[in-house]
Image 1 (cartoon, rainbow, N blue to C red):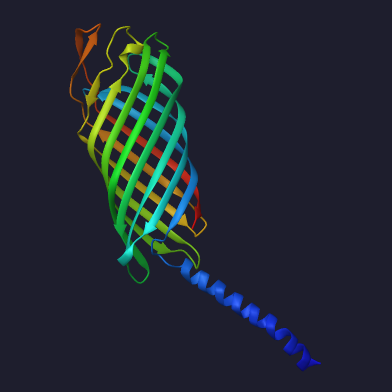
Image 2 (tube, rainbow, N blue to C red; image 1 turned 180 degrees about the vertical axis):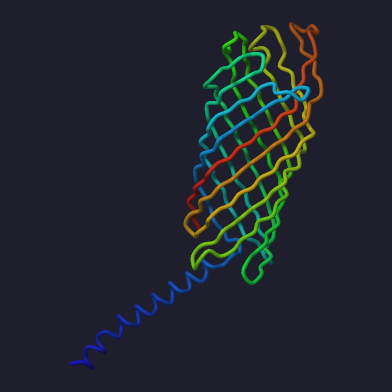
Length: 277
């Protein structure tokens, strides 16, 4: 009876051992620090602050929380190279505060950002370094139409940055099926373009465009990653100098000169994404 029971259980035992071997193989692959093909979809929640200064003093700010939707993909190439792209949509209602124009709350603020990056993995015993570079385009639409607490009339603004991301990712193992991925990035601004819709304030006015080409960005992120999901923290910063001067025209006639003052943008948030292979 014991021999018979053993032979009857052998197929089950072989299946169990085969499944165990597969799980072990999956666990081993999950330990890999190398970049792998995947797609990601997720959400973020962030605190956002945009601030302008004039002659070294506070001029205005937009503050609020934003909910973001993220999508990304990564493809591996030969010899440890990789490339990918990501898209971010972030929306929130921000509060406007000005040193001279008072306060206005619940102003729509929409950020759209698309990036393409590529790089290479350099693997070591217990960690991996992955330098990368690419091209990014960031579009921010802010709607301040209406009146502030002091009676000032607001208008819409469209801000666009084109930049080169230059970054380094550091990965280390976090147990058999996860890893910690930390990235530090410098964003080299190629062009900043600001359009002010002054026609919202004055009928017949043009909508001047100012170039704001002196500035830089910094990014930091830290994510706990598995094969199926990733969660973490990020902080983004932009600092731009004063723009050039542009003419304001009313009904085609010269009215004055306008420019965008130096400004900073800070965004600190949490993100969670699902991964699909």
